[in-house]
Length: 263
Ligand SMILES: C/C(=C\Cc1cc(O)c2ccccc2c1O)CCC[C@H](C)CCC[C@H](C)CCCC(C)C
Ligand SMILES: C[S@@+](CC[C@H](N)C(=O)[O-])C[C@H]1O[C@@H](n2cnc3c(N)ncnc32)[C@H](O)[C@@H]1O
Image 1 (cartoon, rainbow, N blue to C red):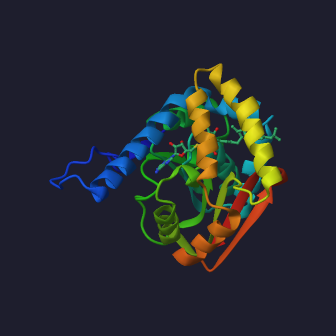
Image 2 (tube, rainbow, N blue to C red):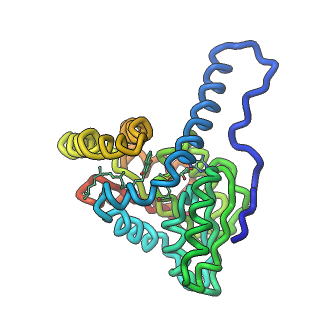
C-alpha cells in the first residue's frame, strides 16, 4: 500500500558551527534520544504486536477500541493516527470511517510502517484500502491546518521528546470542534497503582522481553512512564496548547489512561 515519505529525516546528525556549550549538548542529547527511540521501535517491530498481546493478555486491544471510540471518528471522516506503529489504531479507525472515509497512519519508524503495510495487505477487509502510511514526525506533521475530523495517538505521546510540540501539531491539523484521543500508560499519583505497574514491568514484562533479547527496550518503557505526565498535567498541557476541553480518563484499573481533547 502507498507509503509516502513526508519528510526525509527526523533526526539528522546535528551539524552546526556552534561551539559546544549547554545548549549544544542539550540539542545533541535531544537528537540522540530521538534517534535512539526511532532505532528502538525499529528493533522491536518484528515482535511488538505479539508481545503486546502476550504481556497485556490481549487487554490492549480493548483499550485501543476505547481510544478510537473517544476520538469521535465516524463514517466518511478523514482521520489521522499519529505514532501509528504497526497500525492497530489505524485499522480500528478504518472500520469506523468505512470505505468512503480516509485514514492516515504516521510514524517515524520504517520497520513499524513495513509491518503495518504488510498487515494491511494480508487482511481481506475492503475498507482497509482507505489507509495510507506516511513516514514522518509527530512534531512536524506534513498536513495542512484544520484537515482531519479526528486524531488518535496510541502509546505514542509518551515516546515523543517534545510532547507540547506534538500536541500543538495535532491541534493545528484538527478541524475546529474535532477531537484527539491520546491513549497511554497512566502515570498514576496513587503509589499503590504505581507499584503494581512497576512490579508487573519488573517481574513480568522485562523478563519476558529479555527472552527475546529486548530487556533494555522494555526497561526504557518503565523509565518513559516515570518521565511521563500525569493525567492532570496532560489536561493542563492540552488547554495551554489551545484545546477548548481536555479530560483524562483512567482505564485498565488505573494502569492506563486516555486524554480526550477538543479543538
Ligand atoms: C500496547 C501497550 C504498550 C505499547 C508499548 C508502548 C511503549 O512505549 C513501548 C516502549 C518500549 C517497548 C515496548 C513498548 C510497548 O509495547 C500496553 C500493553 C503491553 C505492555 C507491554 C504490557 C504492560 C503490562 C501492564 C503494566 C499490566 C497489564 C495488566 C493486564 C490486565 C494483564
Ligand atoms: C509504542 S509504539 C505505539 C504504536 C501504536 N500506536 C500502538 O498503539 O500499538 C510508539 C510508536 O511511536 C513512534 N514514534 C515515537 N516518537 C515518534 C515521533 N517523534 N514521530 C513519529 N513517530 C514516533 C514509534 O516509532 C512507535 O512506532
